[in-house]
Length: 468
Image 1 (tube, rainbow, N blue to C red):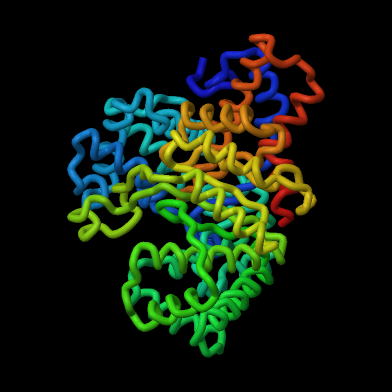
Image 2: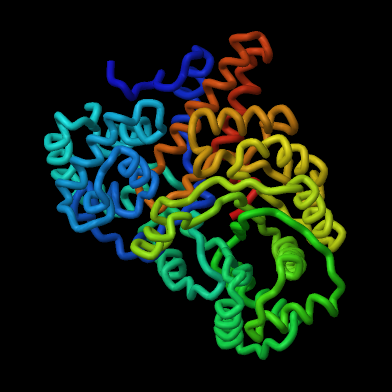
């Protein structure tokens, strides 16, 4: 029997049934990823499996470094063959790491290859993959279509022109919707000089004179409206930690003006200004029916030498911790609610020890105001939690403290066009978990309810929640 089959990752007969009959057939709503709209629009073939598979994939790069592979064969000038061989050698050592599963799911789904990649057969597998990769099936748009993807939400800076999103939407030959996501990380930078440069560019892009916090809010609302017109329905924020400190309007205006002049704010002042900006943005999202995503808890670029050599997003990031998360998160959401501006919100924590804090906090702010069930969402296992253990922990915490039935499900959070088997991986884990509850007599084997639950989590909830 092939390693990848209908029973892969599933122990329960009920789980196998739910996977085969329901989950495996459902389209994908990839509401958070880092694909490039330009790359999708230009639709160019990849040169080889190494370019498709290893370029930009810091998950694989971290594993290769742990396997003692020299940087030349990871991000350096080694040949595609040398890099693929180095990854194949790493796969042999990856039992227990989700990369082992993802690798073989991708080989099976896209290349109809059910061999286990190893140092013995890497040449044959590379030759097989490269023989297919020059065909139309491996152009970006066809990879997406073959993955049964209905919607893709990319990640975009506030001043992005969104040119390629517009072009894709005007092209009737490609039916998957590629929508932008508003990611205003630039305004939360602690670097005052970088903040000044952003404000200057914002003023130029909007034709607004920005001399006060109110001017800034008007200009940001204008950019949000531009995104809205191109189909954006989601924002995303990536703070290291969650904190909230209130301040009056005069204080906020003073802090904003100081930062615009390049003055460095204190830690307390930074939290005050950031809090005001988040509350302001949240109300804009609420008015447009958007969902707000908050991915928190990553310490980035920790290896200074390698950051200088390779730049960001190269595999040197870690899980963060923080003091007083529960207080900060509750107070932030409450401030938004008090301002009549708490939008649909998805909170993702990178530190799994905070699962129950997040799950119990969002329960404090559930309501029927947005016309959806569970407008406050505990986001899926993210980044370092994108594993079987991480997903099961998240699903169990959500079920313990909320209603799993209304979960909006999985996302790729990836820069790779062949990362969609991560949805399949999640669906198998979800079906196995539900099936195990049935097997233990904890829930009934009610086919109608279980089918609805799996359909909801894997597809329907996202459609109803985001309203693309």
